[in-house]
Length: 157
Image (cartoon, rainbow, N blue to C red):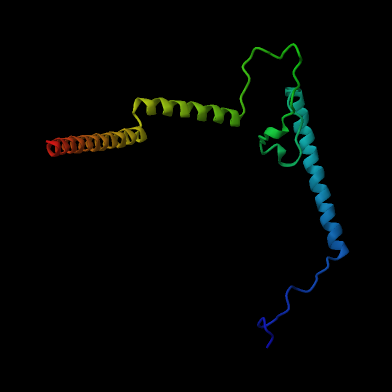
């Protein structure tokens, strides 16, 4: 047995259409198109008499499907007279984001200096603890210095 399993013949034998069948189908298709063409001409003549300013007929499925492709719109060039120099210039996305980032940073720094941010509160709490520790250490040093001076004064007497 081969590796891939049982191999069988795929596909069918070729079937050929006989020429009489092809001629008959083509004749039927021509008759159908001629019949539809006559109906279209009669409806088109009625439509033309009713409205001449309609859009031209679209080919294929264009008439059925409305396509909104922004790339299909042709760019219209402006004349020098139409251009407004005093109008505000549109900023690019990157420029807008950069300006927003700077403003947010300034707002944060302002709140930070006022002590309203979480980080500022934590910093102030840490500073208060350090100040208290330094005051305690300075008081201890002062007490030790006074004791030492008192001991020195006693030993000299």
